[in-house]
Length: 241
Image (cartoon, rainbow, N blue to C red; front, side, top):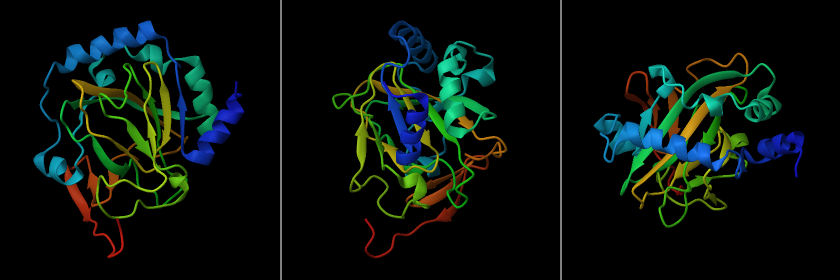
């Protein structure tokens, strides 16, 4: 079994780290039902039509802690998660927020993106994604990452969903933890099953602006969530994918 230091080294090499069976199955089952009870079978989209059309990200967020819901604190407060987070981004890391992300059957998933602008390598968020149900090829919704791209700068403009050479498809089991650098290029595949969701306990190194994830980079635009607007149209170079 790898030490916590070795896990942190792997994260910084690849820009992500997947740990299967990190959380207990019975806890996952209980929280999975809480999420299902909140969303219901076919929730309405939360973002406006411009975002849904241009981003090709069909996901519905929910911020339970902002509503005083404490069911998910058992995950956020897990001492193993705290130790691993501290090893990766420093002892005085700061929590941002807890966000559930729901995708409906037949939706496109999420196009390639970076969760925050990569121009300053020292400014980034850490996604700590927990999967309360298994995600595999039959139900769709696997996470796709490009290893090492947290060190590659800006996601190139191009086709929002096109396969990229050397991409890695992750099919997390129930109870898995995926740590993902905010600059790492990633996307989510289309959903075939009844639903797909993940729970993201976002954090960041000490001193990171609270709005670090307000502007997201896609292959065809930059989008500011606080004002619900496209702030940059991105066009691919002639030889880009």
